[in-house]
Length: 92
Image 1 (tube, rainbow, N blue to C red):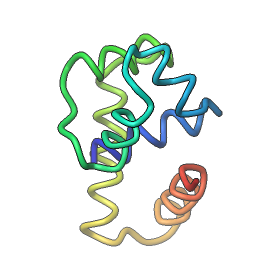
Image 2 (cartoon, one colour):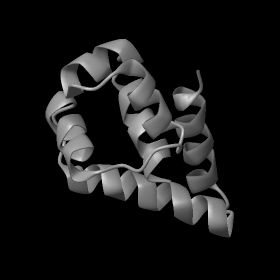
Image 3 (tube, rainbow, N blue to C red):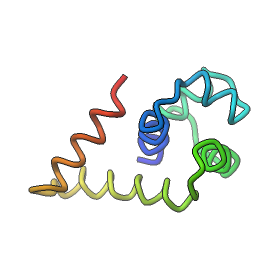
Image 4 (cartoon, rainbow, N blue to C red):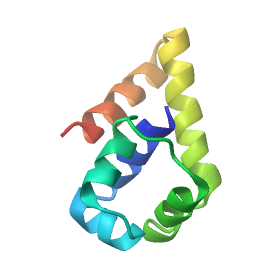
């Protein structure tokens, strides 16, 4: 779910994958693979996201944890709607 959080953060900030990759210092294809769960996310990537989007790494983990909890438990009510909005924002 951490890969979903990375994509959500980038999309929320309305940043293209090209701009994010340049800022973080990785290739576009590598960043795409990270965001799609095809590569392991390391601490350097998290630091890059943290610096690029001016947010603590702990917030990225919090987003990932929230997404995982919703997917596993199927939360009702407002939380479920918020989750759908977040996922809609992250769609390509």
